[in-house]
Image (cartoon, rainbow, N blue to C red; front, side, top):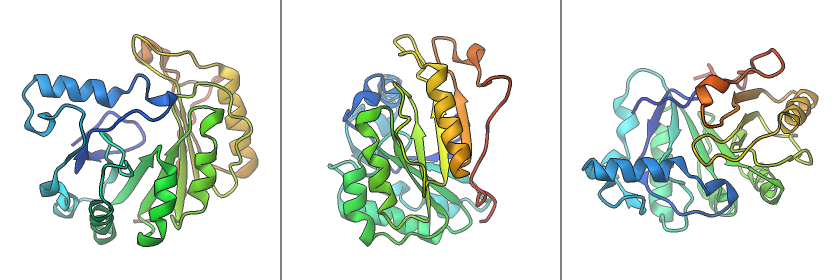
Length: 238
């Protein structure tokens, strides 16, 4: 499915649904979207935002001949505790086979990611990321570093407070963004600048997605007169 998420090209949702696990989940866009799709009668969302496995979609990327950058499970968390190891590994197997695509996987459940890492074949077309929204979740980066993923990234979105203590060594990409929507929590410019400067120190590509807010389009993504839309150097190495 095509997407408006700026740092990817396509979404693939072989699993939908999730549960909240940390502060960043409070105003989950995916939960709101899933309920809307359920109300519209979309069969994939008949269960709303409950974990639902769509095995008929497990090999869908193999049908896409043109190379794409694909965000995996934008409507779920692949490492959710209610998703079986067998299903997780089957989805990774598809990524391994579809070498012409680049897959971006993002999780808040870094402990389970680390637990399963040794069972995963980490081909270089798989970018593995963790969401980090505040100080309490910085440890997710350290879990990520211990995995076998060849490309590791952090999504600091929604950024809810300063995370200047984070160590970006061994991190290949940093995405930063503010929360949007009617109940959005504010993001200070200082928090973004801290991360931009840390990324410069470690030569980590820096992608500033948005300021967010109630009118996110109007607020844009300009940071002190510049736009930061960097990607890992492996972006086109497909």
